[in-house]
Image (cartoon, rainbow, N blue to C red):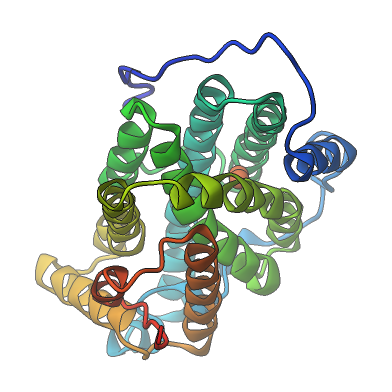
Length: 325
Ligand SMILES: [Fe+2]
Ligand SMILES: [Fe+2]
């Protein structure tokens, strides 16, 4: 398995020579971050017993739940699928935490102003803890072995890490990827079968509202001052990141391992895409989508990127935009 890969970086590093507080809102986020640190080694009950045989996620979180593909599986096969699906799903989040740590370490360099730099320095530590806690959870419950980093995720992070502009990094990470991750962690924190996983997700969520907060505080002014052409480019970046995040995730290997044929996997994939675009799916999926889409639309509006041009783009990934008249 690939254990690391290299990405060329291009951004400029801004070295500040004066350190006044210029953005009190960002400074407050920084203060909150220092106040609310938790420790993976001390604040998690790692010894909570749990029988992993039943799987760790709510079955409703699995794509094929409620379809004939699910119905025909035996209870043992369903648990096996649950475990493998969880290992894949949490692995995607684990790699994402590592990517987030790297993007934020670049943001420390690339953003201007002490307040933004200090806050980003705390997000680097936060993401390191998320990387650490998920890795420890996976090792505790599953032992060794991870699915490889999926292509969509590698492409997303490689692009963010190699783009020169901090705005692109922040839109990709704090606006799109983290909004998705927050909706997912919320769902996992509320519905997972394993109490340890619920605890881990709740702890991660404590930090995430600050991270989204950074995007919401730092982007509106910059986007407000952009030319129409520049704004259009940011809309394109947003759309691209949304397409990668919302439509790129599919654990074909997991389905293969539990015995589905190539043809069936294609059908499952098609079915998943249809459901992602429409309103069907399990109760949990509907709640997840409602939460995710609502937060995304609110954030896009605050930043100034919810333009008429964005409507068809958002609708192409299944996000219905209320009338903007
Ligand atoms: Fe994180
Ligand atoms: Fe985060």
